[in-house]
Image (cartoon, rainbow over all chains, first blue to last red; front, top):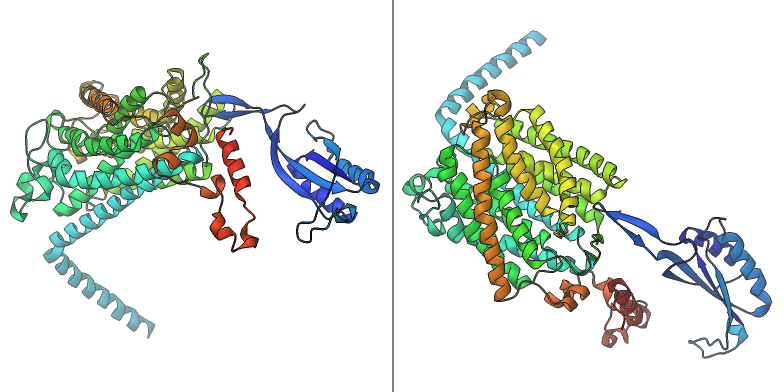
Length: 112
Length: 485
């Protein structure tokens, strides 16, 4: 089992969600995050003074998949989150030890 | 056939006209009192509504963690102003007395036949005493509330209560007496129709004194002298506040006729809105040229600045002069905001530039642009520089604004220093960082943003309502406040 953590643009979310839905991925978690990357921050101007906002708002999309599904899901996220401009985000993949369904207490890859 | 109907119709119109004109002749006095009173009261209600405008403007220009506190200050200073102006303020302002302050008419306790003696300074207005008091009381509320915005996000609530009572009960009424209450500036022929100096500069100078003594908000100015913007939390509140103030200003200026019969209020309203409109445009252009963007809050503030500037001259100037005054006001406002930041005078809402600086400049402009036609109609002072070619009226205007500064600014310095030495003027740094809402009032202006929606004792009965769990709520709170625990 793998956890796919993707930092994406807000405006790409609907395309990503729709395409994940089409390949049968049901469990998606999104979180509002702020962060800094190659894109850097932006300048804010207020009442004649300016300041650099170092952290930009992004979305963090978390999907947990079984190993055989991994490449397909990564490919779908990558295609649909990509605009080609700096600031498209990154995908991080890490192993998951266990998955437990709270309602029933069932465990294992079937619960992903 | 049709001709018959027409003649009957014409005949009845003639009869109706004859009948009503005789009735008018008999009741014209009563009707003029009624019309004057209806107009004055309607205008006063508009001015009272300006409290909502100030509350929204100041609330929007400050941070979410202080919104309850700043709105509360706007509410309670209106409460205090009403009571103080009923008890002593109105007597000091308009009661018979000496050239400096009134000494009669406390608590409005004046018998009907003595009203025009005790309040002789207002006997020119053909309306009942209660209408005069009501109209003047809402003005006192405006003078008080200007300071809350300038000193926002760091002033102790208790300190603000004391300040409000002193300014509306004593300081503001004394200035009113000088200028509108038959005092020494009135005798000189000082022209301030609706209060650029009387109301706005009093609030503005008190605000300047307060801000100098309390100091800037934490983090506003860096060690190397850099200015860190602290953006307000709601531009929609700011803009709604500006629209409400703009509307209220028609009551403020056009209502200062305290009468409707000579119809001058329509001209005053037109002049008022032209100045506000011109200032919003020039303010926007100045901000655009200076900062590279049509800055939202600078444009909003510039509109207010234009309205402040036209308040004194509103009954004295022609429309072209109003556009000139407003245009200059918008430019001056933007540069004044930037200048104050350079001087490290932290005024989150721009009250000092708008109310103090443009209050003074608007009053001086009266001495420049007052037209002979309108000066004769109002019956105060002389025409301005552009018509007469001499500075007689401008000199009187200068004496007036300097005198008001020389009284209000030092008095406010003493007042705020006294408050600082006794109950304390500023909240602790911890309170300032976490917000005045939670520390001064024990709640959040926007609770869902900061804390859990449901206490556990209730949440356990409603498992499906637990979605906004406390962990998430507290995380957002800590992030938004920059507090790490």
